Length: 167
Image (cartoon, rainbow, N blue to C red; front, side, top):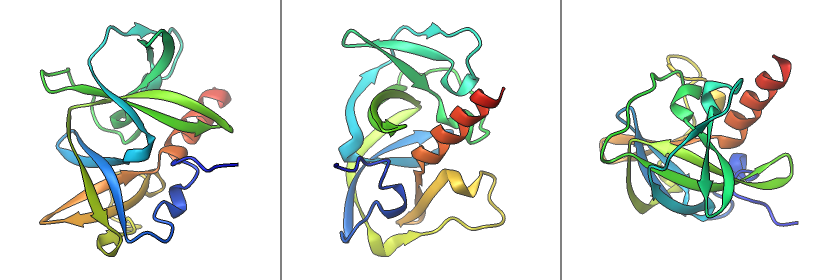
């Protein structure tokens, strides 16, 4: 069975020294998804709210005739929700959720580029002093004077799914 990008979260680099990622902004921070998981980048689409759903995945969109959840991972990180701008986009990514390949839309403030990050510039998130849950971050990668945050999507979606099931 082939591993998807999310299943490889704790070992996304494998034996590679570099990794291609798609960078994007959320609330002024630069995040990145592994480029292999990205299916498409969309302009904002009409959303349908899902009654009773958690705000993190509170709506769905129509993607090529399929209904897919639209996630706002800024809410998982405790960031405030923001109004869309002309630069806002949706990244459609394929995740492995409970053993099933699942398409998910992720709302972003702005999509930048596909770029290569170096394994040597990778650092684990600090265990203290973080404003976000460390388990929601796979690693930080130093790029110039800034850091690129690689979220641990498996943990984010699992924690939110488990919280919803417990409610």
